[in-house]
Image (cartoon, rainbow, N blue to C red; front, side, top):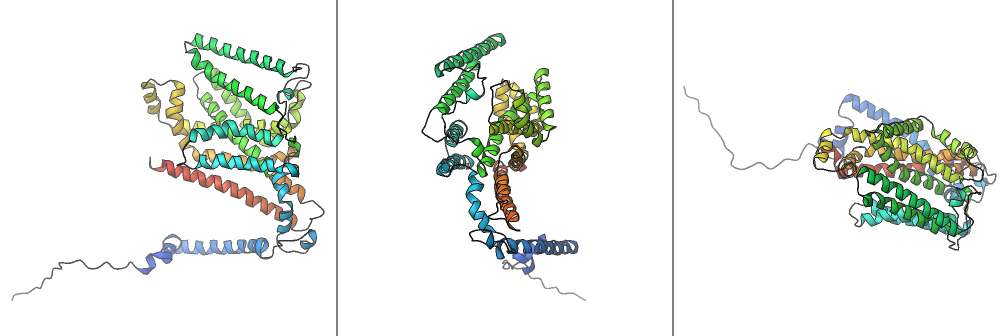
Length: 444
């Protein structure tokens, strides 16, 4: 008995069929990410129910039942929603504090100049980064200081006892020139003893001293602006001044402290370690209190510091200690072979750090650096304890105004403050994520 089999060989491809409808599109995404297993499905339903339970009342309070316009508290006294009319009425104070109304254009100009310098710096494809950095670091702070304070300010006079203060600008110029010459002479002597080129050691110091001299001259000139004391600053202006100054000043200081703690020189390493551990072991609120109340007690008679300046110094030193530990973690993550390769190329210590080690270390610790910046931005609210009314402090002060006092006024102010702080912090975190993706750290 024979068995006959028929065979068939297809000589063309079958047309591709569409994937199952439950694996693509919105349904497929939901099934894959939220309902992949029975447990995940139950957890998704519970979380969605919790979100609806919490978000619905918030939306009703802030949007549906909110009061948007009105002249005074009468429109919000019986309201069950947010009193946005109060925020609209006090918005200028939330931004400028008690800054004179006729001079607020100076604050607006400072904000515009900051954006003009910051936005091109944050966009990778924009050219002339070096010039942009010079503007942001060297030019903008001086221009902002003159605009905000009014210039014509004998800054040095507040730091030198009245008994030692020069009676004339000419005498002070001579004193500063002598001081600069002494500094440059000591650096030249050190370079000679260390066997290094004198010009390479003294030139950067001469440039720094010259830059300081130019700043002192500019801030002492009369530009025809009305002087505005920092006691009248407030609102978002103070928040941004404290946050930006602390971030910019603490970053290079933190790098130096991190390098100092890892230094092979015992004196430098011990001094850096003591500084870091002392400042990290003290709460920021204590630092601000000491800078505002206790520091003037230890200064010579006739020496005064502006309250905002004392706060800026305290915040900068405090933040630098945390920044140093963050950067030190990145330095320790660099393989030893990177150091050995740099030394094999004949690079000096600072060349090795600037060109090879620090760029890699800073890329590694981008999340930690941004986290420190975000923490500092939120910690600016603590300056209220020394009498500086930042953004949140201005909201707290305005909520007690009898003209707008109501059961929902204070809560509305806190919600508005939370929204503003969240916007700034979220923007910083998103830009940090963008930078990490651009540097592609995860695939290296």
